[in-house]
Length: 422
Ligand SMILES: [Zn+2]
Ligand SMILES: [Zn+2]
Image 1: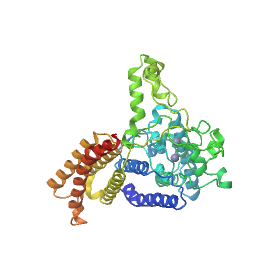
Image 2: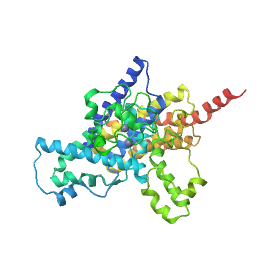
Image 3: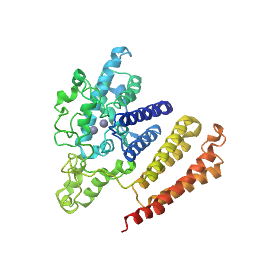
Image 4: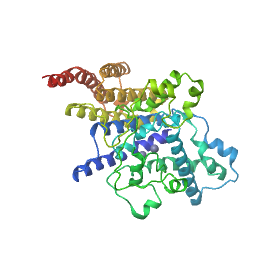
């Protein structure tokens, strides 16, 4: 896990840098594809994902080394050919995993976060799950295990294969000629993120688009069908932690409420969106029918709130980078506590962005908890060793958090109410 934390220490600024370049480019060509609150939400989602993954918080049901040990037909050395074969095997597994995620209710829960943005840009690529609590992915790598592809090759290629899916989340690149027949391109992936009836659940490939062409899920981007982004049941929140469990929560409620025992059992494995007839009638859920005319989620936000959301994101990112930097010194218990602070922080400020009044309780509570930790441990996870006033700065951040929570819940909100008054 430590090597993954080190990789993220470098990968995070790299990805954020590219997102900034896309924002600047959009400004330059006067075609901005970013909306500040949505981008803050997307990047925050990325933070939750990497914090969770770096802590290894997943129950591995089947591991690749286990399969390799029991299934390998031949033993091969890691020659260049093995790397190529392994990459193709990973991509094949990725296609089917992605297809399962789109088509089965239970699996959709851990993928919906990636589709939850109603924008399409590099930041939305970073909306990655934290609800993947069980590791079964290795099962899809049985072909590689049979061929005896060494675990090390898979371990190195898997993050590369994931990171290589970042670049095509953009609206600034058009069709790419002959490449459209080989790899997944921005144009194809725009189709994938679209909810237009022509496009939905198409282009499930990750790096190569040949699987889509082979298995009948390919759809070209059409000139007269501009992609509309999002999910059919809108998330209606900036909080990535809530989005990660929203669909699961609906499934639990439906399974609980339906009177049919058969439906209680099968709902989990039915096609995505399927609901038992009785609960569907009794508890209707908002679904987008007209994809060209729906209101994107945008609770009112002043410049101050937008600036404040950005400030929270920047500090949270900085704290997370410090956590990865001192990963081994902090120790696992400390990392869990640190990770909890980051999670509660993201939960708190995105709830504030949603303009929910209970956000103030989260913000005040985490502010006090942070200050108490600094007071009693006389440090912030060893930050003073790098920067003598480090823990004072973190304490200042927690004070601002308490102030911000109160300000945006009581003071600014009453301004807004006063503005609306006749
Ligand atoms: Zn997808
Ligand atoms: Zn995507």
